Length: 216
Image (cartoon, rainbow, N blue to C red; front, top):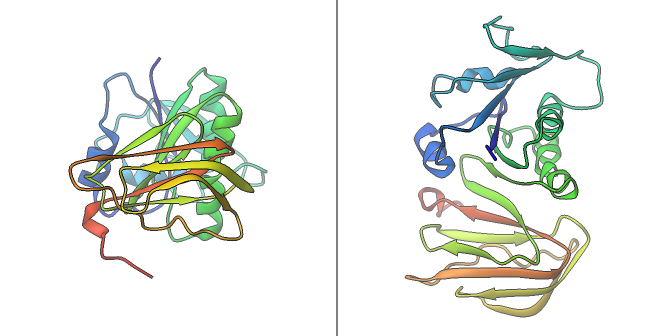
């Protein structure tokens, strides 16, 4: 089935990097959320659906299906777009422009990955620095084209963690929410790292090589 692409209002500094990570397909269904309209030209998008309360960007009144939302609501425009995509039968999501300067919005959008998983869907978030996804029992491969990768617990406690083909391997490990020691691992040159989790899920963040020097 076609993928659903959700575009939010967060800044995107390199459209080329995002497009390369996205690897667009002709069948992709594009939902633009309110302020995400500013990315239409840079990402060369033709939206299938516009969603939002249009407090960040004026409604362009294009000849495109539009869902105009009230400004007082529980769901953000982006979360509403995700729910609408699920209602329309999509099961794979790619979210662009959803991680940015507003930590509250960024964290809320990050947890959409859990919402997807709990509704039988999968997805990734792409920002200026990285590609984010959940990893669980199904093994995930990370190519050495990424500078670093980090594993963070956002659900409580993950157990039975295995990391292979990386500078810091792990066998049957455990990462809890209060002690995040899985930051800035590296894929061994010429290999692909393999990550899996027996119990729970971890947030996998794959860092683009262009930003490898950004450390804290």
